[in-house]
Each structure stands twice: as structure tokens, then as C-alpha cells.
Length: 316
Ligand code: NAI
Image 1: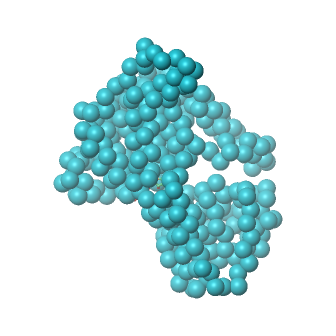
Image 2: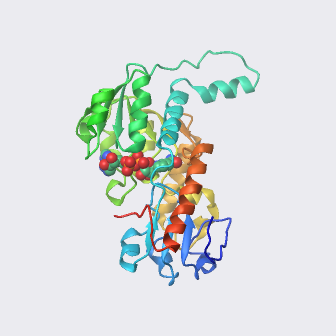
Image 3: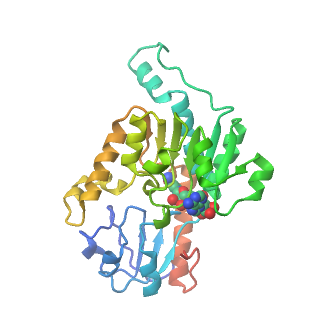
């Protein structure tokens, strides 16, 4: 329980440049990833001392700016990395066994399997990009499914080699040799569009792409092209570039959106309609167990800021 005389104000919507006046007097902001905490928003909250994001990722916050202004940023570093990993594998198995069209068919009262042939994951090679907390759990489950595991991470984890036979290889080699590629690295500026036209061109024909990390990791227009060329056969996606716009499409008309944002929004819509692609609405974190952990850690993060002893501080 907070024992401070802090006034708590709740808003049911995300923070954007258009509604910033609501938070202009705030000392601490608690947000999720859809709130815009870019430099232009920070400029309008002069008394801001802390941001507690209820997420692992903090790419929605201008970290360079917060550091310069002495604003503390705390995140929820791990609320259940197995949660996102389980969702990733749920997407994989839903794709491999045509679960969504199978259920849609029986819901229509048609009890017939013709045309629903799937494929086995056992014996296939999965390439993991990013073997941190979530990637490691995906590896654990993929190993249990009998998949061969190759991986790229600038900081390899020897335990994963010893326990699950993971073979680390350069990024390009993982792309070339995987039947399934699963992304688990942060959505940093450096990682923007790590899968683009050039990378798709090097992949095995028929590769399956999984992305439960961040939308900005994949160029959506290049993915559409790779699907149409038959390079990518299926994709399971929980995160889309500029997905905040899909939640509130009136944002399309905001003066802050550029042509590139509209193009990305159109590409996202095309992917959502494609039957080869399964898209969930950034739902991978959303288990009962994880939500409880997120709330508990966020209360502790805010208490730490109020007590002058911040925890889970994000450092660039
Ligand atoms: P982590 O920090 O434990 O692991 C990230 C790993 O990626 C690190 O080992 C790092 O060395 C590696 N990495 C960085 N750049 C790389 C690159 N270019 N190629 C390969 N590896 C690279 O993070 P964690 O907890 O495993 O989370 C991973 C990402 O998952 C988060 O950054 C977040 O964006 C996303 N996420 C998505 C959620 C969802 O609901 N869909 C929920 C939670 C996290």
C-alpha cells in the first residue's frame, strides 16, 4: 500500500500529444506501451520526475531525453518470460496444425478435415533471434517439441548450449538455415527492421516467421512481399509496427502522423486480412499470472520513486 499523500489520477486512454494537457502537471506517470513518451510529450510535462512503465519494453519512451532531464524510468523487467514464450509456441502450433481455420469450419457446423493438412514441428529447425529471458523459454519448449535449435544473440548463453543443444551462429546464417524464425530481441533503434527485403531474400523458401517481441523489428511491406513471393509461407505475429494507431484509428488524422505511418497502417491491415498470417493484438503478456506480477512490481516501482530509492531503473 502507498502511504504517501500522492494524488492518483486515472485515465482510461493512452497518452498522446493530443491529450497531453491531462497529464501536464504530473510528477510520475504510470503507462503501458501505447502511451507516447517521446521528446515532444516530455517537453510538455515540466515537473515530471518518474515514469513507471508496466512493460518489459521501453521503446515508447525517449530514454536519451529522460536521462538528460533526470527523469527516472522503471520497468517490469520480468513478469513471466514463460508467458510470452507460451504464446509464441501457441502461434506456432496454431499455424502448423491449421487450428484457426479448423475451428472456424466446425463452428459453421462442417465436420470435415479435407484441405486442413498441417505439418509437424518435430525435426524442423527453429532459429531464435535473441536468447534472453523470453527466448530461453521458447528454446526450452521447442526442445521439448523435438525441434533443432539454432540461435543468434550478441551475448550467447552457454547454459542453453549445454541443456538444449542450442547452436549459436551469425545472424545471416540463422536466417538462411531456419524453417521457423522467432524474434525475441528488443525493439531498439538499432534493431528496427532487422527483417527487411534484403533479409527475407536470403531465407529458406517456405520459412515461418514468428514475432512476439516488437513490431518495429519487421518491415511489414517487405513481409507482405515475401509472403507473395512464397519465401514466407506463414507468419504468427503478436506485435505490429505502429500498432498503437490500430487501437485508435482516429490517430490517422492527427497532425503528428507522417506518410510513412499511413503506409505502415495500410500494410498492417493487409497482414491482418491474410489467411496465411495469424495476428493477435499484443496479447502475449496477457495471462492472469503475468498481470498480477505486473501490478505488484509497478506499485513497488512507484513506491521506490516516492521514497527516493528507485528500483528496476532502466539504463540505456
Ligand atoms: P531480454 O533483455 O531478457 O533479452 C533480449 C535479448 O536480445 C538479449 O539477450 C540481447 O542480447 C538480445 N539482442 C539484442 N539485440 C539483438 C539482436 N539484434 N539480435 C539478436 N539478439 C539481440 O528481454 P526479454 O525479456 O527476453 O524480452 C524480449 C523482448 O520481448 C522485449 O524486449 C520486448 O520487446 C518483448 N516483449 C513482448 C511482450 C508481448 O506481450 N508481446 C511482452 C514482454 C516482452
